[in-house]
Length: 280
Image: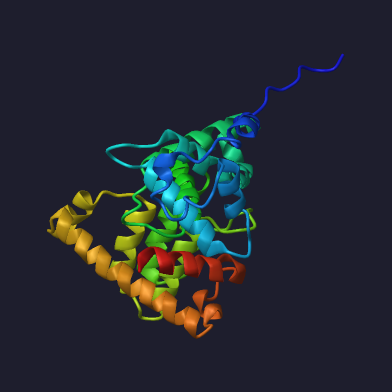
């Protein structure tokens, strides 16, 4: 006898729900958003984000929805749901990589719940561009930090120590084809230290804060600084990193992003662009 039919994943349920939601008219209260106003239905908005030839327009739509979904005074759940649908292909790809989360249904549920949480709390004023990349990277990092089964947690800690002690590009090996955002940032930090763009202390500050998620108050206490002063110090270090990445892109100096001992394909032009735009 055939076994029981598996229940549909959250992804499948969301796609089924979208078949109905797609026909919903863009709410009138969204018409003050220039990126949303010209479109009639939610399906029209989705089509904009699927056009490969106009990434800027796609990002404008995503940013407008993110602002509505995370509005502190009057959040729009429909905007959050629409944005979630637009990011579903990326969420599915992320879930396929995170085998340690469990079976396909468990992975889909965990990634969806975490992604929607990031959407509802997205800091649009501080990060107004590259919405999809930011949200998916935030989701990946939050899942890594929250789950003790995550295979990169220990590797990241070891890599940070090696980065500071040796200035080496200590990107941990992984089976995934693409590096995780944390791995890409580690590679950039190692490159920046080796090239003299950052001191080891600056790289460690960025790594501990952004990758290991150590609170600024705790980091500041270790060096006799308040949280605000520590954030200003991190801001200066991140600006230096962004400027260095921008210069490397301008000079097509991407091969210098990785030194001996790490795989050349683990720090890509895309990674450099993401972190340059996020930090500038």
